[in-house]
Length: 406
Image 1 (tube, rainbow, N blue to C red):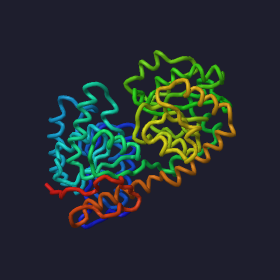
Image 2: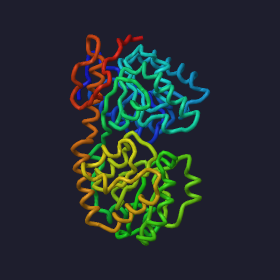
Image 3: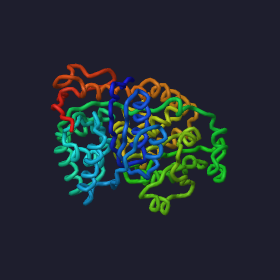
Image 4: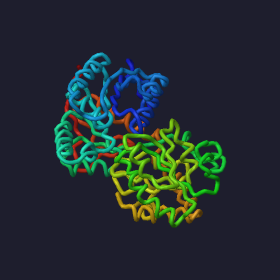
């Protein structure tokens, strides 16, 4: 990927939240774009762990104080963001997730080429009147996005069905294969103190769930399913890796045999220690945790939400997918896989080959760079064929309106 120009291409990423999968995507893009010669700035809460990582990589970080969810402070946050945009004078603005996408599009209003990446749709995250308002905003705000990047065809289809009319691109999430790789289970488990303290040995059937403790990730459904797993596999243990707003409630209602490990700076050892990675989400765009686990040659069990089928190797959906919010099928699938070591090994190898072939982070970064180049190319409109590595949605418009630099 080459983004070097004279003067250097100026990219402004805007993100809130600053944790979880969104933070990992932003970090990977910033790292790749800096290496490619771009001048990269990120607007996010300056005291966050993400801000510290980005500064260490060599990115410029502007302290943009913003709450995680839209609220009464939104217009003030958008005005502050407008001042950041005026100071940075970016060639491209890339806004991540619903909150940053909302504030960025209000602040920029199409005056700079703007890429919006929802990382799962806001109207799926809420209910009732709030869901209706979120849907109206996504429909209305699409006019100020030069491109909307979805991480899966399913996420794009959800937007289309909801009436969001946008110039789409689908670019799957990617992971770093040098960081996420297999390791011997016994060696890894011996190096994780909480497992040793909980009496988890090399032969203990171990299920790991990595994700923010919140409604989206569905840990409550997994905990409801867990007693049936233990009935069928009595020695099984479950580890929930992560923290979040539902942590206290989940801990209070957890059955025996469940370990809450808290937030992990590095989840790699947990993937490598697992016999099985489970992510029982209620909604996603395309979750990173399953891709990371498969890169570590660990089998996964996922709920059939946006991005899940596309993240799995072809032909494994019957083995690895269960309905969302269905504790019975989830328990059945987990117990079956825990009882079949040879099948788990085979699924792990297939998953790693699939991720290395189709979800390498370098492919993702190259595809995003192609979108930037397309937006900045001289002349109106987009090329007839999408750039290499980027899939245009058939039947959907790909032209963008002329942009004006502020």
